[in-house]
Image 1 (tube, one colour):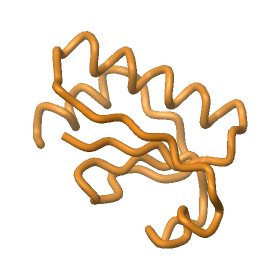
Image 2 (tube, rainbow, N blue to C red):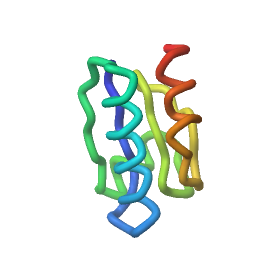
Image 3 (cartoon, rainbow, N blue to C red):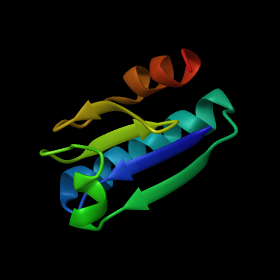
Length: 78
């Protein structure tokens, strides 16, 4: 599974990254996690608000910090 966290490094982006890491660890998901900080690369996904979460090249969340339980549900449905 490929997971990308889109954000420029703001506190919200860092919190989302932390929550994603914990959700992946708790679910035992085999995932490649990448942080995308380039505004140009973020815009390629059509994202206007960060942080954003991309799973297997599909944007699943924008503009909010997902809680760990919400991330787990997303991971289990992919």
